[in-house]
Image 1: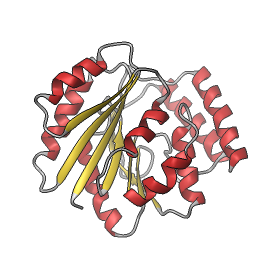
Image 2 (image 1 turned 90 degrees about the vertical axis):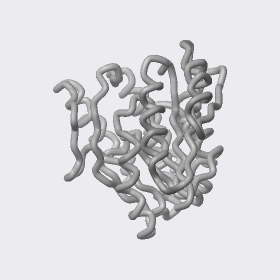
Image 3 (image 1 turned 60 degrees about the vertical axis):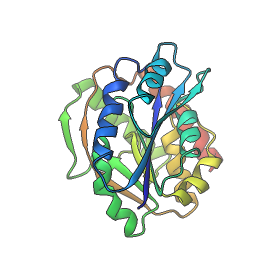
Image 4 (image 1 turned 180 degrees about the vertical axis):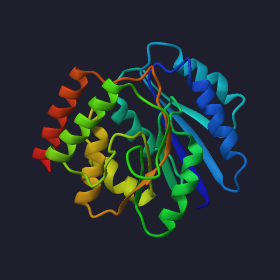
Length: 233
């Protein structure tokens, strides 16, 4: 690999994105390959864009796409993944729940022929540094059960926000993406399977962020989108 691209979708992240971007930059600047960091702002109504613009002055290889309207995490993820130019293209959460250093475990898997490598919190070898509440654990289990029943995508943890792609996988999958909110990860993986791409799931270290949560209403919205994806496929 000559260049790694890191895409960070962001919505109302002004309070925590500075720490995330500094951690990404500090980690990657010590490596022997080129890299870029792209934040794609999803029409935040706080000062996320302003914070990132200030950081650009001090963090090399950081750039920003600033959308004025909110279109969904899937929309800005697609926008970012189609904009970057790396030999491996990673999208990760702005809360830094999985640190960028986890990508180093994934790179050899690409050399072995995988097209997409998906981080997982649910398979042997994964480490949950800060665990969720029992309610969230139950909701996560229920969500995975729904996904595997309605739209199986070949991985245990489809919702982990740490996924890496080859340029060819990006070119095949993301132009076909039409779901931009709750179930966009599922559509991406379903499209990858449909197009015969090789997907590898790997354990990661993950830290639960107490500010992030899924609601029952969110699960219902996701179920509707999953059914739409199933019908489309």
